[in-house]
Length: 290
Image 1 (cartoon, rainbow, N blue to C red):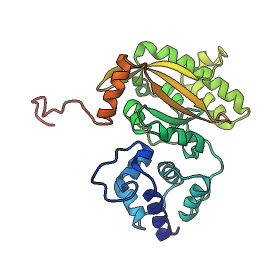
Image 2: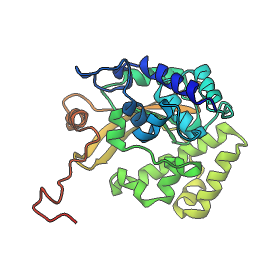
Image 3: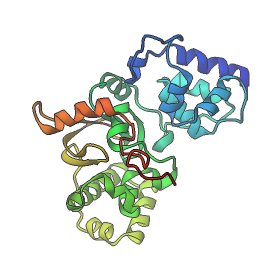
Image 4: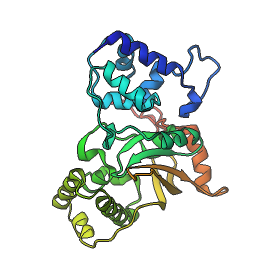
């Protein structure tokens, strides 16, 4: 691992990105070109201290997952991403799937333009690759996990907390849509071990999934009307749209609401609230702190 070259490379890539390119506000007191270190760390899902150590040429060798996250945060193209892996002394991954996949440039370019609406790029197994700040505020950031649990579909059928994103009465609809979508993905991928293992695990762990899988219903989710539960704004009714990459392995999702609707007003409020926790603290409620 070449610590000094890696540090210099990260600094150079950070300096070329404008905050507006990644949906961040441009404040009048910005003293550095491009992004701040803490902004890169936030976009990559890393601690600011850890990223700072990398830019100072210190710290442990970053994992492949960390490098993939940095490549997405810094908007690296394929050659730049490969160079990042070389400098870090890691094997360059193949054109991959899952959370370490490189976001396809066309989808990433479109995502960069969607600054006023929640948007994110996911894989065909519903693993979040990159999202803009409004998407993080709306649906939350994905957990830092790998393997099948990186898939929201997998968590939907194995982790009850995942279902809190939607009202309980909508859960049967989403279950049907998720399974029909996975049926189509499984057929498109053919004899794919990743999909086969996920399906087998879900059939073992969740009877609802097994019953829906046996219906053989098929349908890629291209558009949908969703009600999303937000901790501060309550239930937000939105339309969800999907744009597929040419090979079908990645999707750009974005959320919208017709002008003049309550959902449109809530999206405007969301852009103000962002990811702040607006729930009253114990102190604000006049209760003693624990």
